[in-house]
Image (cartoon, rainbow, N blue to C red; front, top):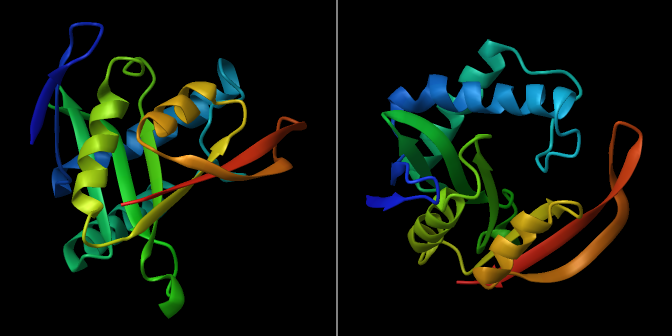
Length: 183
C-alpha cells in the first residue's frame, strides 16, 4: 500500500483490490458513460454500445477478483476518503500460449480525481506487481487522450503503431495508438 497526496491536496492510498470495492468501481465506470454523453464525448476509455447492466458489471467484478486471485491479473485501487476512485489492471493478453508473457494494461480514474497524481501512483504500483508475471505490457489509447499518452511515456511505454480512425465515437473518427514496454 502506498499513500500520497494529489495536486488538490486530497490524500489517497493505492492498495490491493478488495471485494468491497465492487460498488465504487462499478459506479466509476457508469460515471464515464455520463461523462461521455454530457461533458467529454472523447473521454479516453472504450465504452460498450449500451451501458452494461448491474448484473453484467457484478459478473465483470467477480471475474476480475478471480483473475487476481489465480494470478492471471494484477490490480491496484486508488482510495480517497474510503472510496475507490481509480483502478489499474494488467491482465493476460489472451489464452494463447505464445502470448502468456504479454499483459494488457487498463486504467480508469474517476472524473474529479484526475491530474492529481492518482494515475501515476496506480501505474507505478500495478507495473511493480506485474514484474515476474509478465515480460511485456501493452495498451491502447485514444489518439485524442494526450494526457494519458504522456503518462504512459513517463513509465517507459513506446508507440508501436497507430490505427488511423480505428475508433469511432459520436461519428468522429479517432486514431487508436498502441504502446508497449518491457518489464
